Amino acid sequence: MDTIFNRRSIRKFQDKPVPIELLNKILVAGQIAPSAKNRQPWKYIVLGNEHKKEFLNAMEVGIQREEQGITKLPKSQHGIPDAKNTLKIMWEAPVVIAVINTNAKSPFLPTDNDERFTELCDSLSIGASIENMLLTAEELGLGTLWIANTCFAYQELTTYLDTEQQLICAIAIGYANENPKQRPRKMLSEIVEYWL
Ligand SMILES: Cc1cc2nc3c(=O)[nH]c(=O)nc-3n(C[C@H](O)[C@H](O)[C@H](O)COP(=O)(O)O)c2cc1C
Image (tube, rainbow, N blue to C red; front, top):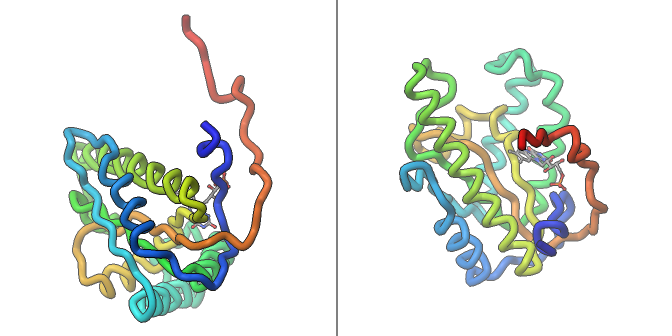
């Protein structure tokens, strides 16, 4: 419970590498998560050094393209400043993990109802796996940021990763250089209905 309550999204990182042994512990926690039909539809690409640089350069190109109005997400233009801020944070983090849904294709391709439900289940499974990883990182003294702003550079990033599978999000990991207070949460009464 302490780990759950103490975890925060970290947006400032120290310039200090993360030992590979700790990354492995975090990934094992992700591996052990429950998943729909035990499909384990996740793949984690751990990017550091030059690879992180190339990934983030691709993200920058995508965000710039969106900003110039060559947009694939026209209703999400208001999110561009936040995406730019997220990119800045990712440059600071020593490690970025690209998270792939191995059972899904690009969200820009058409889908049907069956595929949509399968994708919902797989996304839930991947979310469980990621939360295991974030909590393990917290326990190991590391800070994390869960990142969905990769969506603004979807094409650029999947081309860089050379995959047709779905890039669902990314995770930045490193030693925290800030100690944020707990962010506001809705009241329990707003989010729960007891039908006892
Ligand atoms: C699926 C998902 C995507 C997120 N994407 C981003 C992101 O792209 N950039 C960012 O700064 N924070 C991102 N966050 C972090 C949320 O803003 C954060 O979890 C929320 O504000 C609550 O703060 P806390 O994590 O410190 O409790 C994301 C969180 C989740 C769960």
